[in-house]
Image (cartoon, rainbow, N blue to C red; front, side, top):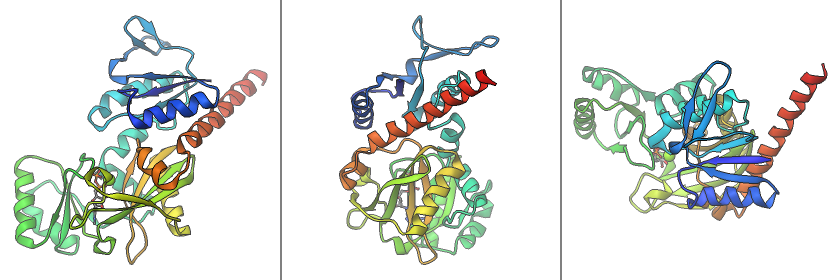
Length: 303
Ligand SMILES: Nc1ncnc2c1ncn2[C@@H]1O[C@H](COP(=O)(O)OP(=O)(O)O)[C@@H](O)[C@H]1O
Ligand SMILES: [Mg+2]
């Protein structure tokens, strides 16, 4: 099979691991920098180019689109989708997952547990927002923050109000969220591939830190998920339409609460913690789906 990994750098750890696994399983694999691609649209012929070279004959893409280029990356994925190239992360699922508000709206509708969260247009609603999420301490989040940057813990009402006012003044889009204190600075990352949890770890933030992101110094250790946690992770990935997802959950007294679903989850931390070859599991999942697509195409010809 011909697999293309959409990634800005071949030297990134997750990209390298996917290339390695694809080669090991006998595939032809290339790393394509989606930022250097451009699309051409004309009647019945959606194509993707790099320079004067048209990208053709690709069976599957694996998008690894960074948060800063979501819009451009989604346009490239969409163009491949129109060529019926298989992608485990669709352009729609990518866009949904990158917007914390949109994700939470979808998750809540799908019956997935989430921390109570509010979003408003006017600073005059600040008092209501604070009340809705159960008062302080509370969490304030930028809609499109990543790696723990843009997540603030406000301990008391004075702090919460002044931070919220400052954000509103900057016209930043923010969520106000219930603080789940039972999490104790930790969260659970469940790695979902093709509707199955293929690895899970608990991430513990460093001392005095409420954010457990590995980028903020958090440490991951492998864990066995409870059946409820498994089900929630699978449901979360499914409701956003992601074939590959890193589902982040906070353990709470009322069950697991999903805070975020990542569409380009890193492989380094999870493979290290679980000692699982998750890159190969991803490639196997791609193989199964390419085969299905090809079977379907054959069926159509035969009918
Ligand atoms: N509502 C919350 N209650 C307690 N801790 C939280 C809450 N939301 C986020 N956190 C902590 O902050 C970290 C970063 O939040 P997250 O929403 O995942 O943003 P990012 O996209 O920046 O990773 C989480 O991994 C978790 O440890
Ligand atoms: Mg996160």
